[in-house]
Length: 144
Image (cartoon, rainbow, N blue to C red; front, top):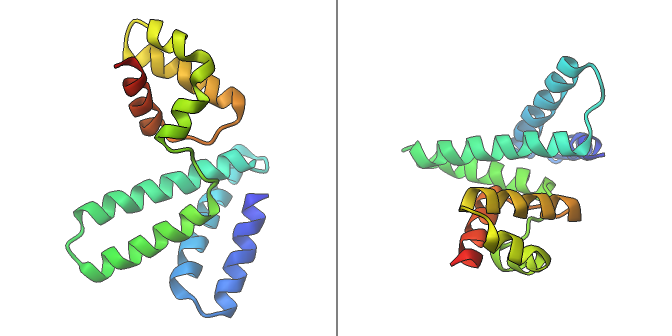
C-alpha cells in the first residue's frame, strides 16, 4: 500500500538525515492517519493519492504567493517528493488518444462541461490516472 511506502521512505529519510523529505512525508502521514481516524477504517491507495494531491496543490498555491525565495525552494522540493509518490498522469495528447472510442459522444455533448463528464467517466473506467484540468483542455481541443 502507498501509506506503507510513505512510512518506509520517511524512515529512510530519517536515517539519511534528509530533513525536508522527512518533514513532508511526516505531514502526509499525519494527514492520512487523521483521515483514517475520522473514517474508522484503513485508507485505500486512492484515498492516500487524494491526500497527496491536496498537499501538492496547497504547496503550489503557497509557492505562487510567497516572496521568500528559500521558502519557495523548500516547497518546490516538497512538491517533487510528493509527486514522486503519485502515479504518473496522462498528458494532453495521451488523453486525446485514450478518448478516441468516445470522441463522437464528446463532440455531441451540449457543452464542454457534459463533454468533460463523458471523458472523465470513460477515463476512470479505463483506470487512467488523469488531472481534471488536463482532461478539460483535451476535451476543448477535441470539440474545436
